[in-house]
Length: 424
Image (cartoon, rainbow, N blue to C red; front, side):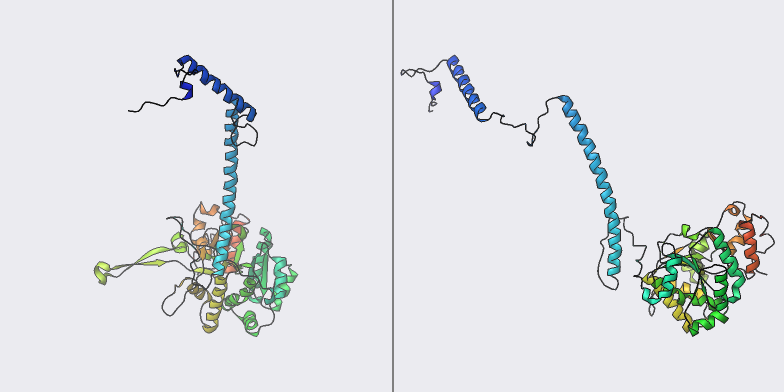
């Protein structure tokens, strides 16, 4: 086994090769350390680890400094988190806007524009984008709407001389509530002059023989069918329209109670939650034995005399479909056609309309069946203040309209009592 090799420090200073004593070796090591320290001090006067402000490492000198630095870092992190949350909210808003633009850009294209998110987080777009306004369609109407509409929204009613009395009740209550954005589409000269004399915003269309003939002499259903042709221009100009029949009394501003999340928001002819909002109706066919029960989905129709329609492609397609069918099927009822086009799904030989829809609250946007059959007999419901009441279920419209005004405006509690639930 080879012996270890001795270094100079382990040898003695003389030529005899005697090893240094243990104390001598310690002294020599100390001397070497001192010498190296002097050299480092000369070469690195600021120390091997600089404490300058630019250094990446800072050595705290007091416990208080550590505590202050930690507190400052926490505050800074909280500030950064708050800033990121604000940015995240802004990004979500931008994503929604871009998604809508993508949907518009992708119309008619077989492209996958979105990826599905985690389970329970996926929701389809509720609101279709509005069309680009085209004032060249009707420059005269565009100027009128610019003056009358509020936030590109307004109430529109069609009227001829046959309903002059009810029309006056209609706009008198609109004025009483303080609704500024409404317009009467006059179908004859008499109504145009009458509205001007009462300081009521009015619009008379350019001459159209087909529309003018019906407008001057047509009955309620014939006149009602005209609105689907007339409203098209309003939507093309970029305006949302709250279409109103004139057998309606206003008690609140309806624009304060709209959701604006669908192509069409309509009042219902339903008289309770089931009939208005839909229910599972079971059909019983005993001859089928075990399969005797067939489930069906039912909902009472939307009322085509009061609905809010946004200026979207599906909305304009709806108007075109209804107007087209009414011109081809002159004996059809416009409300029936309106609902069929809005609800019937695509099936062999038929392509359904892809329009979003919402049913209005039946106690805010109240039909006269709800009022006379239910509300007036219920102590709690009598206290509710509706947005509108539509006298759609009763032919004695003028008398009931006056009574409804007495009840809700003048507080006459027995104003509705002498009327039957239905018509006599």
